[in-house]
Image (cartoon, rainbow, N blue to C red; front, side, top):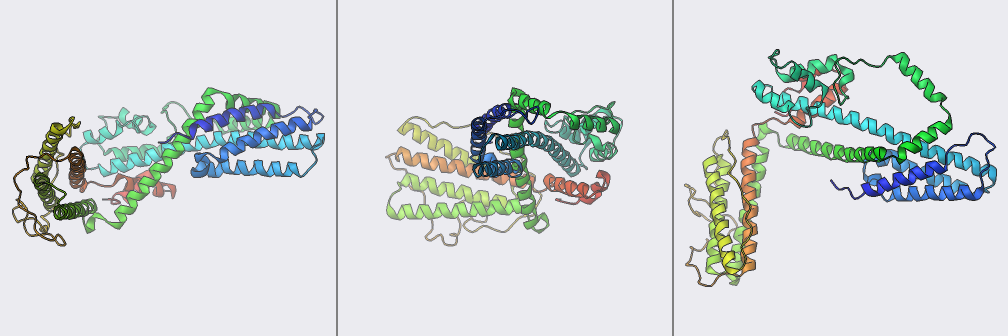
Length: 471
C-alpha cells in the first residue's frame, strides 16, 4: 500500500497539536485576546486545512469524505466570515472559540472513526472466517482447524473459544462459531477474548457520560492537545488510515469476485478455465502473427524461426491440455517451455553475460474433474506438433531449419526469453485455474453472512441461508 500521504498526515497532526495549544478555551469571557494574535492562530488553522486538502487520504478515502473534507469546508467558511467582519477584541474572541471548537471536534471525530474502523475490521474478519469455514464444512476437522490458525483469525474471541473446546465437540467448526457468536454478541468486535469479563454496567456508563459532559472546556482542550501531540496518538492515526485504505481495497476485491462469479457462474461453465483458454488462444495468435511478419521481412534467422515455431507448438499443446483438463500434458508443456528458456539462456550467455534465472519450482498438482473439451485449431489429434493451420494464421509454419552458425543478437534473445517467462506464468496460471474450479467462493459466502446477519438474523440461521451461495 502506498504511504506517501501518511507522512504529511502525521505532519498535520503536529500542526493540529500546535493549533489546539494556541487555541485553548479560555476560563472566562473577559480574557484578553488581541485581534492580531487571533489572526495569527487562524493563519495556522488555514495552513492545516490547506495541507489536508492536498492529501490523497482526504480525496479518496471514506475518512476524508466524511471527516476531513467537512473540516476543511468549515475552516474556509470561518475564515471567509472572519474577513467580512472587523476583527475587534469581541469578534476575535468569538472567532477563536469557533476555531477551537472545530479543532476539538476534528480530534474527537478522528478518535471515534478509529473505533468504528476497528469494529468494522473485526466484523469483516468474522464474516470471512464463517465464509471460509462454511466452504470447508464437509472437510475433515483437522483441515478446518487450520483455518483458525491463520494470522487474521487467531486473535478473535470466537476462535479462542472454539480452540478451547477442541476435542470435546465434533461438530463442524462453522456451527460452533455461529453458536458462540449468537450467545456472545458483545464479543464480536473485541480484539481479546476475556471469558470472565462482563459488559460494563449501564449505570456506570451513564455516570461516566454525565461526568464527561460536566468536564470543563479547558480540561477537554488540554486532554485533546496532549493526545494529538503524543507519538502514541500519531501511530494510532497512521494505523487508522492504513486500515481505512485496506478495508476499501478488500471490499473492492470482494465485490469484483462476487460480480465475476455472478456473470460466469460455475453451473454455466468454468469461468476461470474459459478465461485462461481465451488468454492462451490470443497469445498463440499473436505469436503466429509476429512469426509470419518477421519471416516475410527477413528479420529472423533460421534459428529464431525454429525456436519461435517450437514455442508455438508448446503453447498449443498447453491450450489443448487446458481444454481437456489433461494435467500430465500441461505439466509436460511447462517442462518443455522451461527447457526452451534454459536453451535461450545458454545462447545469451554465449553472446554476453548470463541472464539470471529464478527457480521456477515444480508444476502445481491439478485435479482433473471435467470431461474432455473440443479440439484446438492448429493442433494435431495427438497433440504432437503443429497440425492444420489456425484460422487467420496464413501460411503454414515453416519446418525447423538448421541453425545458423551466426548467433542472434543478444537483445533479441532477451526479448524472446522474457516472452517465454510470460508464457510460463500463463501456463502456471492455467494449472491454478484448473485446480481451483471445484472450490467454493468464501468471499461470496462472507458477503452473504454480512447481509444476512445485518438483516437481524442469527449466525446459526444464516448458515443455511448462505450454504449454497458461491458453490
